[in-house]
Length: 120
Length: 109
Image (tube, rainbow over all chains, first blue to last red; front, side, top):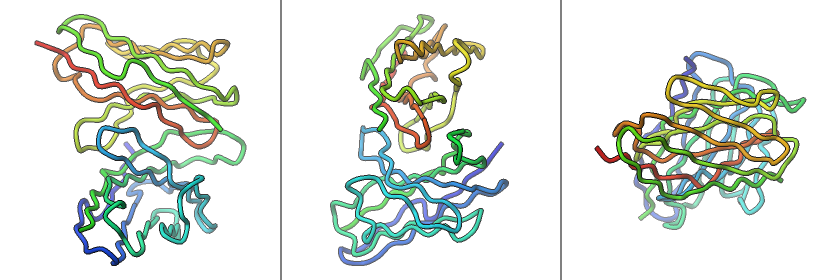
């Protein structure tokens, strides 16, 4: 089946530093990748939708200058948390789909293993 | 945008009993409804999904039903086992996936 990897699996950083999280589709080309964050015992909250070669679409309330998303290739998307603060500590999960969403069609999302970010 | 509500938030059943989790959605354009199982600290795993042109789908002990008119869909797990214990999320998607709040299922041996 489709495999999505995420790196790193966990990271601890100091407040004010930036952290980059990579999401890779290993055996398929992902035209679209999604970034979610999940607080303990809560559901996944969509942060942004990333299409290869174009700017990410951010959900309302998500600061695009703080959460920089780059989808440079069909197999790689990165999320950079800039100037991280303790309130950014969370579980960040990416997912990837291989189909096209242009006409409202939806393909199965395959999730990465997640990245646990702790900001001290 | 889409809004998904999920009930119950917690569910405890005895091994061998059935478990039912229900979700409602708001966007009539939603056409894809997956269910995910998430164990503590791990990624969500797709367990079953249904598209809007189908009313019911079954895969061994798991089944999903969809009522488009009422905008609700349900997950049914029969003959539950302790390893079914996890958090289950429903989702609905016109384009971007919107998740329910989750149901923590505990199966007691």
